[in-house]
Each structure stands twice: as structure tokens, then as C-alpha cells.
Length: 437
Image 1 (cartoon, rainbow, N blue to C red):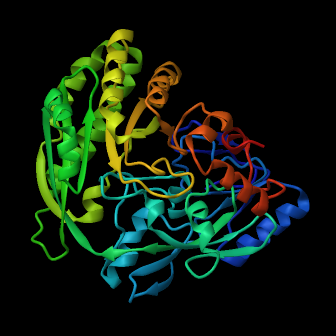
Image 2: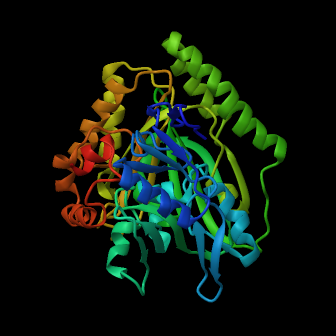
Image 3: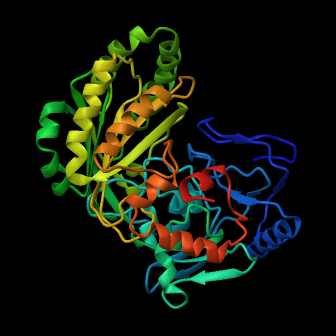
């Protein structure tokens, strides 16, 4: 939360701003009044959620709208399994809100601290070749446009705008509510094992196609992949959750506590990193369990980091990964954070990183106290050479001139932006760069 006169910082500490005004609207009508007032004052206005984007996409030098109070269920369509949520609702709150109706979100990313509006606006995704990003679950939305009007988008009203509004980068308006197409609540059987990296790469296509959800992590300086394979089961399937003590040791003591210490020491003594990475793959990532979907798909991450992620045509994931691996070895870098590889189905959202193509995602990270520039820029060049599109909420250097060629509906999106926000009320430096002024 940011108070007037205070500084807003994102979670990764890669963006910050001291807004001129901070407002906390608690209703859609209050959002509309804030937008209209900002327009009258000639001030730009931006909504912020939990600050989990690593780019400056939510930076608000003028009016910062904190949507934390705009949370909860608006309506439920039991017959069609659809639920409308206020835009500031946090993802980690959604399972409890859906539980009384026997529903769940179809898929989630591995972090659930974000607001629902922030997650969809930046293209947040999970993994699973048969599932799109979170924005593909949207069947309706209400937003306040740059001319201060409320716009409803669903299958009955303005349906042609849904592929743009569902993943709008915050450039088309302030979302006030979102309608999700949910699914019956379900469980997941999870198998997590360390395996030889060469074997995982050799069988990657079969693993992705043969599982509901598959991903792997690779700690640089090792030859091991930590694989995660998940199978969807009915909600009433017999559950075998992780023992509380074992889960705490894996996810809090090792993955957060010890890992934070090692990352901190590694910034001063990089030489310890390879040894720790080899130890980490022996101590973690070897377990099997069954639990409700949200308890399996998401995890707690307390170690602060910065991230860049690129979406690639699925057939390019392996060669791009191998080029990245060779790069790290050639440069002699000591990288403490693992590389994450995930997958998603093609979709038709105009600015989705998976627009028109089945996609794989390669994400690289650095501890937040380390300068990621050299590493990220070199990795970015590899990803671009394999047809990559950057995640909108994660660090990258591309601008509208490059991005236009990577998105077939880019100019359609900009034209809609001209219509809904002609005075660029919702613009900021990041959006000026990626969409043009």
C-alpha cells in the first residue's frame, strides 16, 4: 500500500515511483470518479495490484489507484460455471471464494500473490500444453475507459473486443471486474523428481504431450533437471498431501531460508554457487503427493529476485535452451537461480505471448541484489533469434518497432487504444516504449 507522498516499489525492486496522488477506490463507481477527476486535472492515472510485475507496466507518476479494496465476488452463474470477481481480488483469495460453488480456476501460475486484473493484464500463465494463460479464462470484463465511460465486454456486448481487453496491458482502461470461465474443482497428482538433464531434453516432446502439466527447472552448473509432472483428478480423489513438516523443510527452510542466505553470500563470493546448486538438486524436488489444484500449482516464494521470460514456438524450446546453457558456460557466469521451462496452448488473444502458436516459456532470474543486465541482455538475444516474445510483466528491452512484427494484431490493438484512451490517460514510460506514444 502507498500513501500520499510515499514511494511505491514493485516486489522485485526493479521499478519505483512517488505518485502525485494515491486513491483507494472501493467500488466500480469510485474508479470511474477517479478516472474522470484525473482527466479533468490533466493527470495520468494507473491501477496497481500486488506489484509482482518486474517491468514498469504499473508505474503511476500521476494518480496511483490502489485496488486492494476492490475485492470479492460480484456474481455467480452456477449453470455455466462462471464467476465475476472485482478486479483487485488476489489470486490466492480465489480458491476460497470459488469453493462454496464447487469450482476452481482452470489453471494457475506458480505464484498467486498477484491481483486477478494484474495477472491477466500482463499475460501471467502456468504450464500445460492443453491450457492457455490465465487471460484465456476470461469471458467478460468491465472497464472504465480513458473518456471516463464504463465499457462492458462479453459475449453479448462488444464481443469483438474481448481478445484485446482480456490481455490489455492496462492500456485500454481500468478493469473493475472480470468474469472467469471456471471448471469443477479438481485435484492434482504431482510427481517431482530430479532427472538427468540430457534425458529430459531428449524426451521433452513426449513429456509435454503426455502430461496435463509439465515443467522443469535447471540449476546452472549442474547436469540435472528438476521435473514436475501433474495429472488432473476429480475433486473427490483420495488425497495424499505433503506432510506439514516435510513441506516446511522443502519450501520454507530450504527453498526460502537457506536459499536466501546462499544468494546473499553468492553476491560477495560467487564461487560458492556451483557447489550449492549441485547440493540443491540433491536435497529438493523429489516427492509425490496429491492435493487440491491450487495447493499443487502454486508455491510460496520469499526470496526476492528479478526475472525475464520469453515465449517461443514450442519446437524452438530445446534449441533455445541448449544455446542458453552454452552461453552460461562460455561466459563463466555464476548463476544462483534456476532456469524455468514451461508450456502453454496457442490462443487468439491479440497481445498474448502464445497468440497463434503453441508455446514454451524459458525464464531466467537473478537475485535482486545482483545486476541482471549482462545476463538478461545476452539471453534476450538468444530468445529473439528463436522467435521469442517477451512476457509483458517481466524484464526485457524491446520497443514497439520490434514488437509490432511479432504480433499480427498489434496495430489493431493500438487502434483500439486510440479509441478507448485517445488522450493516453493510462500511459506511462513502459507503455510508451512497448506500444508507442
